[in-house]
Image (cartoon, rainbow, N blue to C red):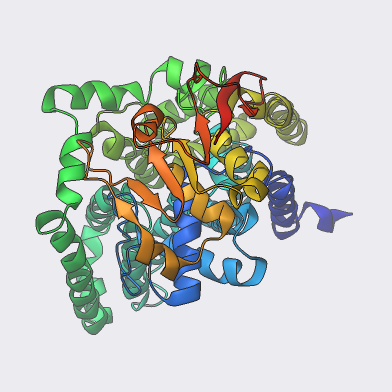
Length: 507
């Protein structure tokens, strides 16, 4: 009986619970891929089939995509899944589940190392598993999950360099992979390295005695990794995109503080329905209480490991604060593990005070599971209906429900009201990448730095009334506005039954 309460067995249970709640209906909920997921999937498909991205670049380090230059790690991780399972929702989203599972395990390892307490590690991994902040991101095709996993791995190797000085090199490689996974870590990684070095500054002499070669190699590799990033932002178009989304100096502090507001953490969360369910905060009320108590405990106890977790938590909102959209759950993704660790540390501290420790821990688990079950059931039932428009569900319906009709028409005209419809055509039709590159006609880059496709093959994208000005002969039309001189052939509804696209057949 006792073996069932061993940390390793309990961690396996947590991981199993994580996998069940992430893989269940992963291809159906959320109800559609959104444009970035479709872009990741199609570019992975293009790499798998031709060794080139949609723009014709061979094995790029930065994927131009819509003009925002997607990072490579997640896209390349999708490639083998596309090869094995085909181009579909599962192939795009399942790598995120695996990276997220790595985050759960690494949170356990880091928390255990920082606290020297396996049960702090277990509660940390349990808290992050049921975290509302983490949940949606961990079962959809978000690049940030790869970034967060490599970021935690880098911290682990840095903190464990006493075992082997070559862990410093592995740590640097982890930070590089995180920075090539998601843009937030291009800001967070250097700040984290600085914090980790400051925490180890008194051990500098002993580090040098262990061997200088790993340190020299680490610096060289780090410099080499920065060169493509420098070229992107200085010589290519990446810098213009950054200028567009960047916040002004006067709004930085306001943006930063917004990530600690009760409205964001507890009541409304991120207002983007692709990041959080409506009417749910980023964390549950019991965890907010534990987090606040944890702040006080760290300061009162002057815990060195506690201060490290606190500092790493506090730098988390910086990537979101330097942009115009705040609070932003995804760009502040690095906060999640350290919220869980600090909360778990407080559970351990309170457990020392309370005599009935087992009952106390069991009550905490039951309370948190109650909150999570409510969240999870809402996610399965209400969330798809609530968020289908945000997940660009109408475009999925266009290219799945009407595929058989396309061959009957010379022109297929599709409104761009919901943005980047071409990528859904490529994804759901599994369109030949070489053929697409030969046919594509692109619009000029817009004010946001985005590139859009005007047409390829018989597909045309844009404002329907303008496209119809060139003629409507033998055309299948998907429009968000009714055409006064014709009756619709069909319509496309959101999951809440609202009609958003009318389908017309014009001879």
